[in-house]
Amino acid sequence: MIPRYTRKEMAMIWEAENRFNKWLKIEMLVCEALAELGEIPPDALKNIKENARFDIKRIEEIEKVTKHDVIAFLTCVGEYVGENSRYIHMGLTSSDILDTSMAVILREAADIIIADLERMLSVLKKKAYQYKDTVMVGRTHGIHAEPITFGMKIAVWYDETKRNLDRMRKAKDTIGYGKISGAVGTFAFIPPFVEGYVCQRSDLKPAPISTQIIQRDRYAEYLTTLAIIASSVDKFATEIRHLQRTEVLEAEEFFSGGQKGSSAMPHKRNPILSENLSGLARVVRSNSLAALENIALWHERDISHSSVERIILPDSTMLVDFMLNRITGLIDGLQIYPENMLNNLYRTHGLIFSQGLLLALTRKGVNREDAYEMVQRNAMRVWKEGTYFRELILQDKAIMKHLTENEVEECFDINWHLRHIDEIFQRVFG
Image (cartoon, rainbow, N blue to C red; front, side, top):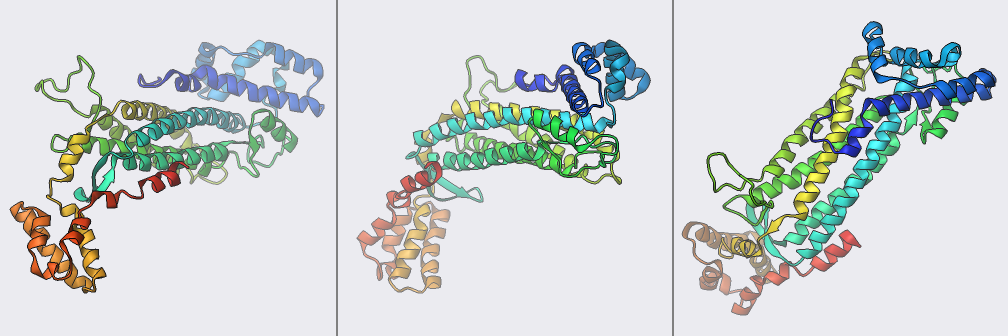
């Protein structure tokens, strides 16, 4: 069953119709290659290609008896082809069809996710430039640190998403290998020429070496790439959730007319989209662990990975597609509150400028430990008393012995912290 959150384009990839079409295409390509080698008579090949088709309900009926999906599929196709069906699947093992077709399907899914990431990058770039000079406080450990801009925060997300795009392109390449090498990868009953023929016409590369299957480290790389993408989305969503907290309220998910936040409290405007994304990321990460577990199989292959992949491959691709579209729309419609950002910036009464004072004192020849103690003792008074940091500094004779009033004022210049923003943006966006 395709989950209801799935977007149509991705859902179609995982429909039975597409899966069986891929199987049939691979089988037909194998027949073509064998015909070129003289293993299948031309008339038989013509008959196979004209009549080979399937009926999903009939496959399901047969599988109830055979308990084997590929045999059920081949039996169904054979019913349409007739006598010449003996040439179909000749010298192959089920995984020749399953793994080669799955590589095609996963590349199709990757193309959708790559397009999602490209759209997300476009939105992130627009937002980053829109708020390039919107000043806010930077936080480390959740505590006010020094000034940044909201555009910088979005630019960090852009740069990470760009890396995710590179990862997804690499994962698409890593998964894009087929195998038509028989039961244990020795080409005992099917020559290597067939593998090359099939892969070339399926936009795949032949696996340099295989067993009964394509090795599952390729699948693990694909799934862990999806997990990294999902984790990045989780990171962005978690930040939005923090920024929407009532005590912060620097940014907020768009709240549409008629939307309800709580069944009990009419005033609530909750970050439900972001929370949803954080939850879904946990599923994708869990699926990547299952993919890692699938790498270790008995000898040339066992079937312990198969049941897992029937869940994690469609689920993870569909989830990441959904998540990327949701976070892109969320960021595009994000409500930003610059005034709240400024108010929060000065909530600590100037403490965010402490490093400038520390460095100004050291430049005047004060020992760093002594300078740190001078600045810190005044900072602790601000935390405790709520007084203004600048005023305490100007009243501290030990500090003022080294600094002029004008030099102290310069330490509280917010523009000093933001003077390299243009250069940073040039490095990120080019």
